[in-house]
Image 1 (tube, one colour):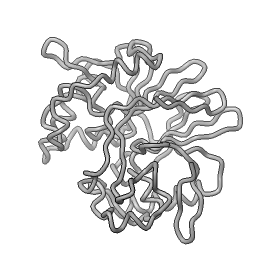
Image 2 (tube, one colour; image 1 turned 30 degrees about the vertical axis):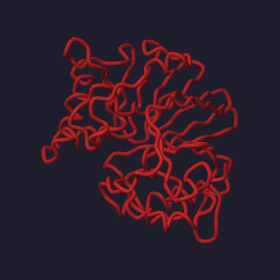
Image 3 (cartoon, one colour; image 1 turned 60 degrees about the vertical axis):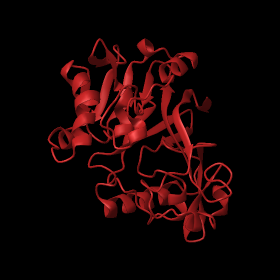
Length: 284
């Protein structure tokens, strides 16, 4: 468990899965030969052989009066997932969440930066053969554009399955608030549109007591994309827009004190963006 303090706001990382290598399916350009010259990625974000380290985790953001869980990983018992290893998971995610001080019935807000498989899974849990809300006392915040895009998606069976078991049940139970990409959750927390990976993708800005942080979502999957903003994720809906978003965000963040907390960053997980020649790096 890792925890950061931003003014009066606390951010806690709850890991579902971590791994080394096996990431070419999401970042096909990040070969070992291409990664090795980016020396600053070691040891946190790549190993000595050039294999990327990545994590699937949730981030609990606690303010004075809110408990927000940002992105809910893959979830247990789910089927028809894009990666066979993600089918039928049985992890201790909820126990780890409670151990960190956040039993599921104390969460009052669930924020989905977007509606991909590894960001919505614990929205629901299997009880008596039914998918029921994991966080029964929470409002689930989903982007309006994002929700409408995936609701009518019919071409990919995997996406249909994710929507059916992890999105539709909480919507049908009346727990979803469809929001705009610049929605303010509370005084300290505000959504930031970071489009391209999906049509309504957002990141989360945290500002408290003169300190600031940004939870990325998937506008970048790995810090290697700071060194190579042109490396696109295979899952990007609009690769050109996603690349433009990365460059815009890196330029805005470079040299500032904003703590960037990566949704899939392993190791140190957080750092500050610095210019590095014609590109950028993450200083931890």
